[in-house]
Image (tube, rainbow, N blue to C red; front, side, top):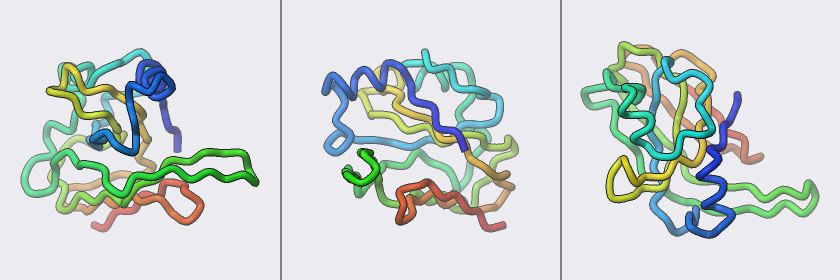
Length: 148
């Protein structure tokens, strides 16, 4: 599925204002109303003020997740530098709005200062009560699974 990189986030990574390995990176779930993430969105508030965060994902199943186990892998064979992290797991999702993206951002003081980095499209439907697991496999591709 598609990954969108936000312009301002990419700029800040290149300029060194965002350090993926040492900054606090957080993942949030966004519902289907956030279609084609605008690469011009800059901060988490650009999403939350429009009501696109999984607002109805309440109960024990949803909270924003701090990303752990962050590292870069340099692949000299394919000439790629890859970013990976530990798996992300949400259990017992209680949303009535279909989920569409996992959005990663650098945590700031609040949503107005938390820099959007990239959005990954969730390639499946997450139903009420389902678990959602996002992990990076051996090839550093993102795998998403759910259990009913």
